[in-house]
Length: 248
Image (cartoon, rainbow, N blue to C red):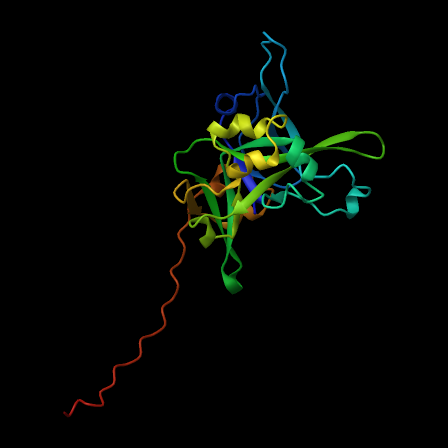
């Protein structure tokens, strides 16, 4: 799954990487569910000779709300969508067909269970330090009062062999060469983008152990990404060697 992530690259780098104009924004080190996140969507068919961009960026709520929901307070918070079932599940089926988006990130956080001591958090970032685009789904929810809210979820897939040692799931990474096909919901149906949903190669990310500062949403400084040393597991004492045959 993906429950926290960061976007610390500059707006200029995000714009260049995803091909969509973006407004200025500060670095965000601890983005949590229900907060606004940036997504990039297709601008749809453009008139011949138009200078308008093919893609646009917008802020949405991280927490997907299907358009058929009657009571938002009684509906669970959907921050992730399983890529294997998104095309058929009622909550995500329409968005998977018509409203696929890219979610720019600098990296994400994941927790590895450590038994009675809780969980060890990791800062997981691309080894080359570049911007990553997660596959996402968007839905505009019309509230009973008439107002509308744009919402989104991050698609997840089975973890690759590296991330699997931390968690069984990981976000879907859309590579730059697949941006156009992923965003083209007119010509590309879910079956046409199924290959994009595969986990990235094991050496794409690096996982850095960090402190539990990231657990608190109020902690938003860069220090939450500082590496910490993980204490080695204590080794059981060796059994004393038998001296049974010392006289022989």
